[in-house]
Length: 133
Image (cartoon, rainbow, N blue to C red):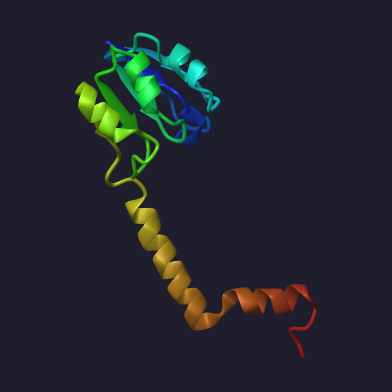
C-alpha cells in the first residue's frame, strides 16, 4: 500500500516521527505542498491513501488519482476535501474526531479565568508601567 502525507509539517513540525507507519505502508512525506492542482496530483501519483491537513483535494485531483481509496484529514474537519467527488468515486474520507479535545477544554478554562481575574489587563498595566496608579 502506498501512502502520501501532503503537508506533514502542520501535524508534525519535527518533534514526532512518521517511521511507525513505515511498518505498514510505503510512505512518502512532504512537509508542505503548494496549492497547485498539478503539483498535488503529481505528489499523490498512484498512492492508495492520502493524508492532508491544509492541502485541498478537489474533484479534479480525485479524478486524476484513480488509485486513491482513502483521504484522511489530519484535523477535525474535512472541508479541504471535495466530499461529493470522493463519494462519487467510492473514496472514503475521514478525519481525526478527537483531535485537540483536551486543548479545547484547557483553552476554555483559560478564557474563564481571564474573564474572572483579568490577567491580561493587569499584565498590560505592569508592562506599561502604570500598575502602581
